[in-house]
Each structure stands twice: as structure tokens, then as C-alpha cells.
Length: 328
Image (cartoon, rainbow, N blue to C red):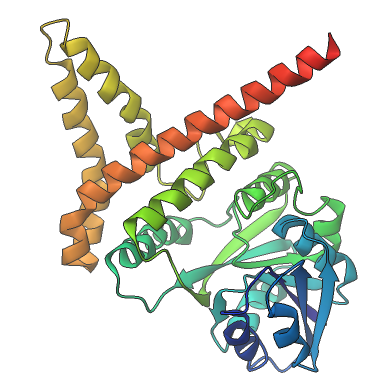
């Protein structure tokens, strides 16, 4: 049996579309759909209760990591699939997600892909960002990162690894942490671009930047726990990391140029533009409008992500200081 697990919190606007898609799969084998209601205060639980073939598990609000772990602990399937309550899986999603397990017994984890039908500027840019990452992962025989929006694991390995770390209180970077731990344990994970779920991406630039800040903030904790992934991982293009590293140098050199007659700031910014031009060129080939806007959007993204990383570092340092102070 296959178990599909969806955490839901105040998801009354999206859960019906997700459930309708999950119950209309072309997979011929046995599968169960488990929804873990994470203490919703809207009509989410009532909507789910209307689906008689869906298992509803309720818990007090404890966050998405705890909700997924709860679903996994009560699942009957040997393979567990995860998606989110705002995702609509393609009709062949389950079949595509379990295909790599059937082809290779060493595979313990599978990652699927995002798509969107949105036409807003921000949403189109987000999708193109994902597609850039997908192109990178298609070339890799194994990966080290499986997002929760389209994830599958052998249940025994998932439980052995302790599932998602519940110290991540929001849906951000707990999947990074688990993936990194599995990779460090020598487990094989793969990417199947044909296992597709449709998603509602942020449809405004402000909404997109808020999400990027939050992800960068919590990514610090994941990397702190898995420092071997600081330099390179299968999910993030190296050009993105290099561009991000240059952001503080741009501002430091600008400040320095106020006191010293130097062209260093201009040189750093030109190097930055050359690095992001790799992404800009790829985007232009797929969407001219977004491609023309992408230098501005990438610069905003990198600034916000750097702010998030800095905030995450300060947060960890503060917690460490409080812990040490309490031990004195």
C-alpha cells in the first residue's frame, strides 16, 4: 500500500482541490489519503470530513513538521508520499512518484516538481527559478534535497531518521534538514520531473520576497546542523550562491568609496552582473518579459536572502548566548 500524507492548517480555500486530485489518480494499486489537521480554526476539518474515504487525523497546532510526522507514524503504506494542502497533483502523480522505487531498490526518496498556471509577474519568476533548479537536478544521478510539496520516502527509513525536525516551527527548511541528514547517511534520493503538482506561487513581489526572507532565515539552522552542505548542494545553482556572497561586498565597497578614491565598488558590481547574467540569459529564452525584469528581481531577491541569512545567524547566536548565560 501507498500512503499519501497532507498536513493542513486553515486550508479551507485549497484543501478541496487537493483532495479531489488525490482521489482521482490513475494509480491502480492500493493507496490511502491521510490529512493531518494541525489545529485549524476554520472549516478545514469539516470539509475533509465530507470525504468518506479520506483518513482525518486531528492534532493541536504543532507545526507542519509535527503534522507530517504524525501522518507517517499512523500510515499503513511502506512508501509514504507528501504534498501540501495548496497543491493539486497531476492525475499520474502517485504513479510517477513511486516509479523510481520500483526501478531501483536502493532508492529511499523521490522528489517531484512544481508547476503553476498563474500569469502574474512574480509567480512566473518563481516558476522559472524552480525550473532552473530542475535543469540542474536532471543532470544528477542522485540528489540531496527533497521538498515537502512533492516528496516520497520509504517509511521505514523515514522513521529511522526521526522524520522532520519539529524544532522548525514553520514550513521552511525542515525538508532541507531531513534531506541533508539522509544524504549524509548514504541514502539514495532521486528526482523525477514527471511527478508534477500544481501550486499557487506568491503572486506579488512583496509576497515573494517575504517567503525568500523566511526561507533564508531558517536555512541557517539547517546548514548549522549539516555544515557539509554550506558550499554545495544539488538544489542550488552555484551562480546563485556566488551572487549572494557578493551582496555584502557591494555595500562594503560602496561605503569604502565614500572615503577612498577607488573603483572597487564598480568592479564588484560588474562581477555581480556577470554572475547573474547566467540566470538572466536562461530566463530570457523562456519568458522575454520576465527575462527583462529579472536583473532587478534577482538583485532584490539576493538582498532579501542575505538579510534573512544574517537574521538567522543573529537568531542562533542570540539563542546560544541565552543558553550559555543560563548555565553560568
